[in-house]
Length: 336
Image (cartoon, rainbow, N blue to C red; front, side, top):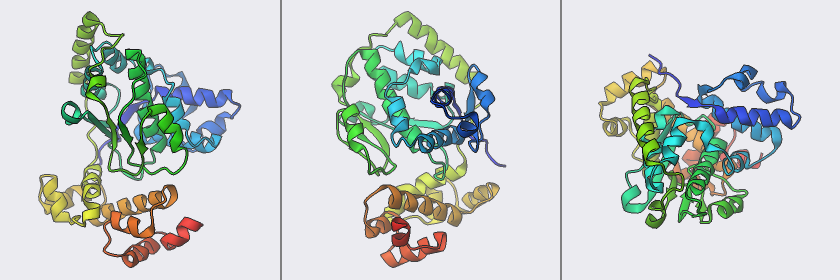
C-alpha cells in the first residue's frame, strides 16, 4: 500500500504567489507546472503536499532568477501566519522552550518536518530535515525555514543573537556571504545535516512575548489537536534513504545492514519496498544519482571526493555508474 504524501501548511506559498502576481508575472507563469491551482489563494488555511510546496519555491526562484529567494523571504517572514504552532512557541518562557514546543507540536502545521533536539541540552544542537524522498527538490524551502526560525526567535527575544554555527545538508557555492551576514556565524553547506549550534546562554534567553496563562491554554489546545490529528508517516523509502545516506562514505550500505538498522529483516525490508514499487538497489541508485548531480552542480568538490562520499571504491566505478545513469561522465556533466 502506497503511503500518503506528507502534508504541510501552505500559507507561505500563498504570500509568495501573491507577490509574484504583484510583480507582474501572469497567473499562468506563476502556477503552470507546479501542481498547485490558483484557487489556493482563496483558502483560509491551505495545506498541500510538501513536494508541491518545496517545488513552488524552486519554481519561483527560476522564474525570478533569484538564487536566494527562499532564504531572503524567511529572513523577514511573519511567523504568526502559521497559526497555533507559532503562538505556543512565542508564549513560551525561553528560547529553549520555544524550540521544544515547536518540536513537540510541529504536527499541528506539518507532517513533513522532523526535528531532533536530543543534543539541545548538552551541546546546543538543533537538527532538522523534511521526511520526503531525496528527489524532491527543497533547497529554497530548507533555507526559508532556517532563516525564518532564527528571525522569529530574534523577534520574540528582542535580541539579535547569533548561533555559533549553521550547517546545511545541501550544497551551495554562491552567495554564502549573504547567509553568514544574517546568521552572524560560519555557515557550511554540503554537511551531514541541517543544524543550528546555539550557545546555552542564548537558549536561556527569556522571550519578551512570553505569557504564562496563554501558554497553558495553548499547550492544552495543541495536545487536543494532536490527539485528533491522523499522522502521515514518512514512506519507508525515506527511512531507507536516510539509513543509506548515513553510511554511504563508509561503504556499509548493504541491504542486510540497512534492514538491521531499521529493526527488521532483509526479507521484510524487501517486501515493504516492493509495496512501494521499488527495490533496495533502485533506492540506493536513485539516492546516489540525486546526490551526485547535486554535488556536481552546486559544489566545488573534486570528482574523487564525490566518488568517496557516494561510497565507491574508486573513481572509475563512479564514472561508469554516472554514465549509466545519465549518458555522460561526471566531468562531461559538470562542464555542460
